[in-house]
Each structure stands twice: as C-alpha cells, then as structure tokens.
Image 1 (tube, protein in one colour):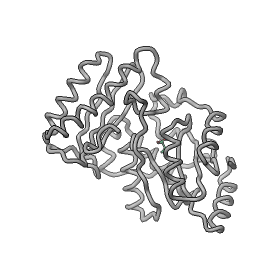
Image 2 (cartoon, helix red, strand yellow):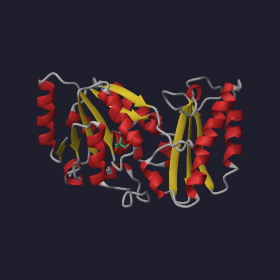
Image 3 (cartoon, helix red, strand yellow):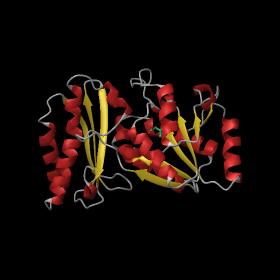
Image 4 (cartoon, helix red, strand yellow):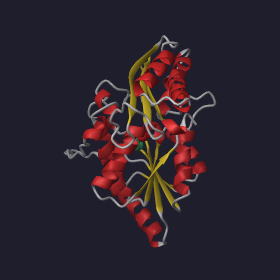
Length: 284
Ligand code: PAF
C-alpha cells in the first residue's frame, strides 16, 4: 500500500493506474477505522481495481462545541487495517493542505440538508460536501462508497453528484452492526460503563419500527409512538429526533412504505449517536 500526504503525488499515482486501464474506487474516511469502513473497501474492490482511502478529520464539519479535538485518532492502526483490507493508496492530507490560508469557497447544500442532522448540526453538511468535493477533485474516482449509517450525508453527496453532473458511480453500503445490534461507529469508543447498554436503544427502537411495518402498520405517527416506548425503557437516553422520511429528500411522511427511511439521533451523556434503517430492510 502506498501512502501520500501530497495531492500531487496522489494525482500522479491515480493517473498511472488509470493509464493502465484500472478503475479507481474511493473510500473517504475520518479514520479510527472499524469493520464498517472495511466493508466500504470491500464494496469498492468489487467495482474497481485501484482503491484509494483518505483519512482526514475534517474540521469544517464540526461545530464549535463538538468533538473535533477529542475525535479518536490512531493512524498506525488505521494503516495496518487499510492495508489488510486491500486499500492500494492511503491519502492522509494535513489541515493546511486541504484548507490553505485564504481558502473560503464552500459547497452549500439545499433543502435536503435543512432537517434532522442538518438542523441539529448547523453548517455540518456544508463542511462535509466541501471536503468531499475537494477529495473527489483530487482523486477523480470512478466509483465511491459511503456507509448507510450516515444516510442523510450519503443522500446529500449523491444529490451533489447529480446536481453538479459529476460522472461518478455512487454506492451506499449497508451499516455494519455488533452482534447485539449496535451500529459500528468510531464514536462508540466514547461509550464507557453503562453508556453502551443505553446506546442499544437506537437499534432496538429501529427494530421495533421494522417489526411494526412487518405487522402491517402504515402510520408514521403510530410507528413513532412504538419507537418512543422503546426509548422510555432507557432512562439515560436523550432522543434528539425520530425521522420517518422519504428516501430522496428526507421529507417527513405520514404514511410509510418499504423504502421509508427511519432515522434516529440520541445522546448518551456527552456522546451523540445516530442510526437508521430502510423500513422494508429492517435492522440487518
Ligand atoms: O463520514 C465521514 O467519515 C465523513 O463525514 C466524510 C465523508 C469522510 C467527510 O469528512
């Protein structure tokens, strides 16, 4: 596996692979890799011959009171995992490389970013789209893979590709979970003592929504009530939102179907967690 900190070196490497006729797969990450990230590499490998992974904790997508300074980092471990999972080139730029002095241009998302995560984290999606657009311009991938765990992010990036006529294949890869249902996240490392038990409330509430759907329930408000009753069993959980939404725009719906996205955000102490399912697919 090659490793680059310089965009010029990365570009030269990508150009050489493309000249050899290889398709470039790209997996952007913020590091502290887990099986969820590695499943993105597997998905990229199935669709391309040369796989680039970036590791960059993007300051632009963190709010002033968020966890940028304590976001978990372990480059040595990430390197080993990336290599083992079949990454061919690791791009690890510095903040100065990505945002040199004077850099001020941003990608501003539309309506789809205004609710749920976008409402809870003002500016977050502009930060995500800006860094992702920059990375796409540096890597020039043929195919990119993003996790379903950040569903609204994935929808917004797919929308950006369409809106800006970017000829890149876009793949959303299902969330990877622990055996008990907890969605893998780099932030799970924050879950100490009883917090991990409380965190299970998210996947349990989503499983309840899927159970309601399978039992024939079509009313979003009744599904929401059933999910709230699950959250009530977890006293230390602070629910931020339960979104029952249309899968393109994330607009709330009154009546659900198999493609409806059910997304939740909740706090356990200072840790903020998100999870979601597509209703007809359940918690898998
Ligand atoms: O999902 C993430 O890890 C980040 O939001 C991303 C897409 C790498 C952009 O910083």
